[in-house]
Length: 275
Image (tube, rainbow, N blue to C red; front, side, top):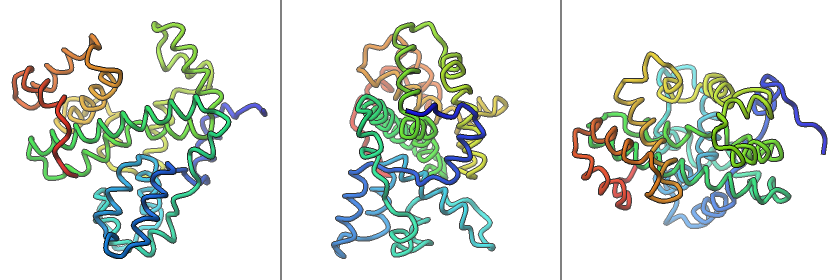
């Protein structure tokens, strides 16, 4: 296997030209909707798109690079974006290909890591959206999408650079004291956060997603909402016995002005909110 490029700029150029892959399940669900006019509408398509962080970022990147000249605002609500684009144009211009599973057919371990990351992203999105509604956030959809896409650059690296990502994961599993950024610098040649920041800016993704990396905005309600949702999804990924969870519950309780035990019951229940 040829040596993978280590330059951040090289990877940014690759991703700028690459077709973003999507989950095979996403492609199947979209085809199912497309084949049945009684099921096909902007809401049903949006539900499938936002169940797949990679398909979501694929659509948003397309929209931002094909903006109408008179469009003055960001399109973050996926349903509204589909209504503006039109479903025929969506299926034609944003195809649900290639499949992640095909790209990673020789790297089953990488596929497992990717799917785990997708699952965490979905959970983070649902938590953040529910809390945004409780906080009467008028732009809860942006909060949802930002939480869903917090790890999209990591997902892209699992798809396009599985061998080195497996090595990063192996080193971290062997020594839990290693900082992610240090291992990434050693193996990839750059920090994952730097790639995420650049892609978010270059692709003009939602402003809230860009704000997550701005220390000056760390204490704003919307940024805290997303980051706490991401932390909770990560810490609870393997169950509810992670020692970091009590602190998560207290921080979410402070955000929502609730008691920690009520927060614990809230987040353990299946998500009721529909985005």
